[in-house]
View 1: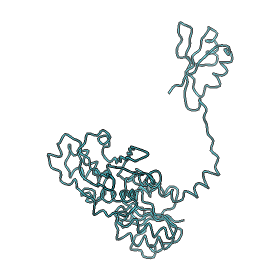
View 2: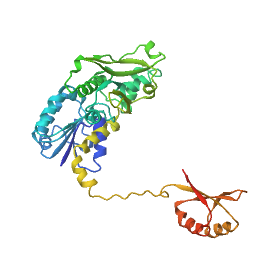
View 3: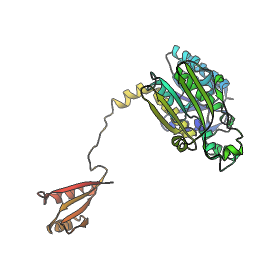
View 4: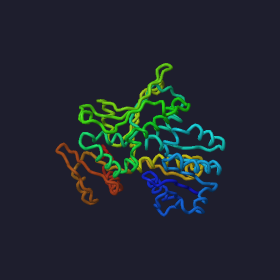
Length: 376
């Protein structure tokens, strides 16, 4: 099977580096990185769209992606995407098309980086009644707000780009559109019907005033959802907080608080920005699309040896009563003792390499009581 990666930005290049160790990956990008196929070579570009291929799309543009999706459906293949713009606008329509061909679309990386909220909503929380959730959905904004008291806004944007936390086209992060797309995906998943992002109230963190920058409370850019009877309150805006969990979520960390009917309160924290954290979600979707085959090949056929012996990975201290004959055997077997006491106790440190010597040593004092303690 061919594996195709479209787009080699921060996330795409990280996914390529992870998967290329075990698989042959074909890539396509406007920047010719990793000797990838370029769009100017029409014959090679057309060869990408073959049967028995898995499409991994990490471009981040709706217009360019349409051709890839149509070819994916035409060739009866699964589809992995981190395109939050596409998913927030056309998720239910695209999902319907893939269900018609009995295939799936995976989009874990489009929401919270390495935080697996989509899988949780599909499985664990699928039948739960969620009363409210709120949290940080954008790692770039959180990085800027964490350090806004010490450095200027423009410097923080440049630093976030250099560290790989933000893309070069950072406008969607700063103006809140990135968070808006993510929040609309989560909102649609929770309510199980399509909700347009246009109805969600949105504030941005662009050009914060000096008063807000120096205010005592910590600043967090939160997405908030609350359901009361038949009323739903939704909001994306800047909040001031003293909540310890929100304060501890610094830099590019994302977090989500959930309050449900049965499972009650849950807190999820993980890295939400950067190439490698987001790539981890793409790679998990990659293996998830083959999970049945992987189970047959790996889990059922291979035999795994489980070692549960106490002496496998620990050192030990042995304590026993002694007479002066003990020193004779310690000298012969070349076993070092740690300490001996006036109340006739001696401490011996046991290593894994000396285990047979210790057993041989204990044979001469088998009638005596001794105790062994783990040393970490």
